[in-house]
Image (cartoon, rainbow, N blue to C red; front, side, top):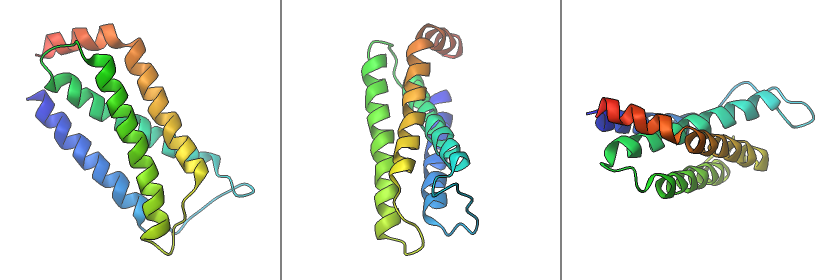
Length: 132
């Protein structure tokens, strides 16, 4: 049951990132072409994206054996998703442009999520056992 709920929210969140990454945004604040607040939002969005998808797989799988391998697959998928969104911004829209800084910020969020799951593995295992 927990896995189904997490799957729903992971899909919904992924769709929201896609939607908000491809629509017209009327405001933009930057400092010499670099917007630190925007980059923090990118990092946070991709950290949460990675957290949701990894939690889904934690609760979907019956064992904890493939925890780290699965974490790497989720991280790679989230990283590639972030790159795809940047490519789509440059090809599907005339009002958005791809940005290497966004890719770096997205990747930072993914890496922070990976570190979180590596450090918190014993706790995640306990929580899964309690909820399963």
